[in-house]
Amino acid sequence: MADRGRPRSFDRNAALTRAMELFWTKGYEGASISDLTVAMGIGSPSLYAAFGSKEALFREAIELYGRTEGPQIWDAVENAPDARSAVAGFLTATAHSFSRPGKPRGCMVVLSQLNTTEASASVCAALRENRAQGQSGLEARLRQAVAAGELPASVDVGAVAAFYLTVQQGMSIQARDGASEDKLLSVAKGAMAAWEPLTGP
Image (cartoon, rainbow, N blue to C red):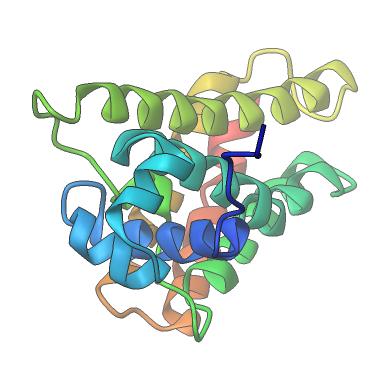
């Protein structure tokens, strides 16, 4: 019997990258199926055949964003010699990443869907979970510093992590509004002035 399956006539990975950048720019609800098919260079039947649904496509796009964009920021946290350098590196890398020429500005996870609607409830939940992972990542790095005696045991690592993650999320909005890399770096520098008051005994 003849093979009824036909190879897709497009590069799935390239199409997913273009979808990611459109979601990153327009948000989940702002990116229509028509917008997506134009950006991806495919028809809607091919989109549904390859990805299943708009939500499934978005979830894959978020995963791709985490794999391709996340390391530029989180490597600075993981490879830093101490907790202060880790947080400073986190904010500095954020300033670079959120303002790169040729890329959408700001953070896709922060900006692509904030208001929950009936149609987007599960998308919002997935993004909240993703943002919570950022909080957990910073907390884990700070706990390492406490365990190593670098920070006092009295430090509220949850509060410190929440503060710096909130700064980063604000930098995302600033970047989307056109803030330059230098302005974002100045925000990072100002935030680090709070390090000693936040982490001191």
